[in-house]
Length: 334
Image (cartoon, rainbow, N blue to C red; front, side, top):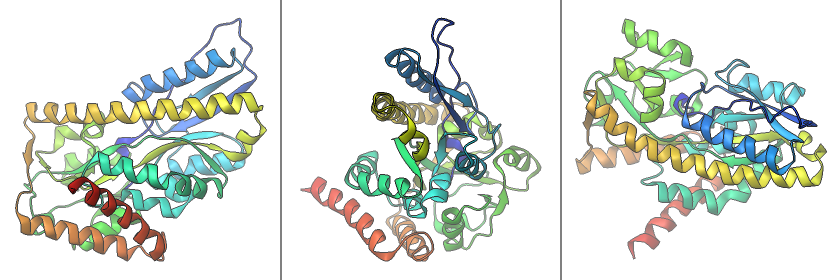
């Protein structure tokens, strides 16, 4: 699901007057400044400048100043930008099959997430490349939860929520349709005000993202069972990358994977810390312990994924993804 909350943030770092930068990568993200994402990306940028002797670096446009994912992708295709930190929704705008990574109740643990990504890494990367983009690194937002002003444990509880929907997100729309919910489509910038006025009383986000967006000030409950693992990545225009000197391409690609792995781990750590912070601020965690409720949610996930066959991906790809996750679970249980 294209979740806000979970997104990449960067900042332009000056290397000093003595260096003459020859290649500037214009990068855009909807994420605001001042997060762990920013700190890690500063390290990424510094590594590029250091290893390239100042020839290569980022110029960063954070906080959606270049627009949301769709706008940024269009600008990259026009050559106005070269790179972006995208949500799962944005990745799906490039290659729709990647939206399966955001589907509900697909993963039980980060270990399963890592296994699927490593197993299908080439196929997922090829899907981006075939559409004019190259993966610099996966940078997931992390597990997303439902946050509400009324307790939610069961499928039936979900039906009473006035849920927010990120406009145009087919995965989220299909998920809530499975729950018989008619969500309210809103831009991210409209959500806090809508929580304040009561237009919506339910949102989905990572715990860290919820705090960053200040939505935690307007909700009371968190469903303990994660809704989905929100994907994300840093991508770059294939045309731009191919035009770079070979030595700079190698520096960029190698460091991209290194720092995105670091960013993913930090995000996971800070999401765990964010849950503790939410509890200290009075948000109640509602665990889903009923076997019946668990089965209902698992069945809803399967139904949602099946609904999107022919729209975002084909049946063969869905079968391959679900088989890969089950392979990991089988191996772990031995």
